[in-house]
Image 1 (tube, rainbow, N blue to C red):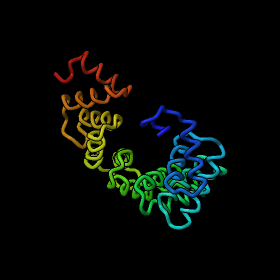
Image 2 (image 1 turned 135 degrees about the vertical axis):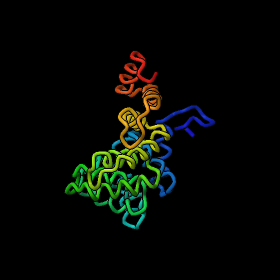
Image 3 (image 1 turned 45 degrees about the horizontal axis):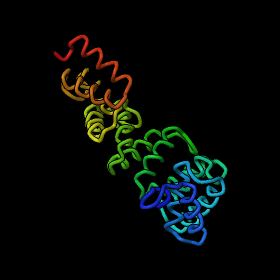
Length: 223
């Protein structure tokens, strides 16, 4: 209540104190709430240590969400020494059942963080996360399909995924599908559709889309 201001005056410090007390007494829901507060950049340094410990205990017992959060702790040095290899270990374990972890694990494979880079394996995990509805994974997979990284190139499949992510409000995907319509890659050449998507991305602050929209409007490219 104090954190959200629901029914009482908002007081983040008091809210965190109450969460801390309940979490220390073993209340699982409070531990999760405090953990989320820490992962969002709130709380105090001592909270990070407690949170990492709770995640560690739960992750070791097979809790995949806790395994993912423990991996994030190791990746960011929250309550533990930053360790990308341990981060990769726990995030890989969580990826067996947590869609967000599948996306994160794919990114780590793609970048070679905590393990050797493997573009083919990264693409497989992006596919799993994209299929689970993770919009950033849809964009990442579309980029790999467009560039032919980690497997065969497919402009049609890339365009399909960019459209999915664009429909979900992803500005970068809106710009990308606009660019595909402009060049006729994976879709039919269509300047009006290109302008429409550039405009949508521009409204969301995408700088390059704003530039392209300005060109389209000033030159009357779409007619």
